[in-house]
Image (cartoon, rainbow, N blue to C red):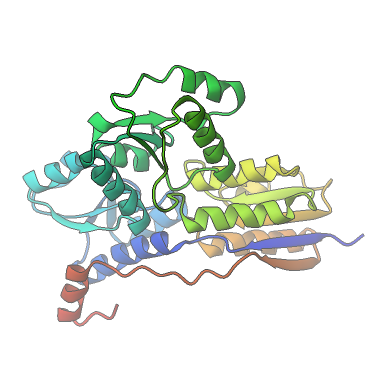
Length: 324
């Protein structure tokens, strides 16, 4: 009996991840190693290990960075407190924050100045949420994206906000359906709550989830390629399971080789927005070796968005004769 692979597209790198990795690569070319990076540039060990081999040094505390060295902020963004500490240590900063994350930071500041209290929907321990919260902590209440009764219980126990001028913002990498459920629950308790002018969940997160939803119920199993600390990768597993398909997160082909595939006739593949394509291709090659002889691509939508690197960095590269 024939066995089938269905590759969801788009998958893998989004524009923000591609830009962040490019900034580190170009900085290494322009200035030479070491180049220090605050936190993992993106949540993928393959990417981090590859950049480490080139001379990038990833740190979680700026005290680990020698005074005066170059520092790159990861795609997830940082709080003003981190930026102030960098300036105090005379670090030469390069900002690789995804512009869509920067948008949420700017919204938080703007609405706080207008007197709004902000419900920030997201995972409190995620670096993106930590950075956004740090912009105006006195004006933000973090709301975890719980499910079912746990969600309603959490909403009931939220402290009363200091004003009825309320708005919600979100982490960019949430499960879309979970986020909508949180918003509905918040609006039931706080009828004056409004949303941001534009959706905060990023296009790449939404596109990858919708592609999985479109095909999951037709498949026996979904392979999601990504790191266990990658929020958007974990959400893809959730979406596949909620669509009626068994699913699991794999960092790469070595982990997949430990999994029994004998019961599956059809396997879907997708990858989180911080997953390089080489990891996806290795999994396709392995499945082909295992007898999955049909290959299909499901193209949900074409992605052609690209983000430019910071202007001052681009000018510096041009002066050094490095092509961007």
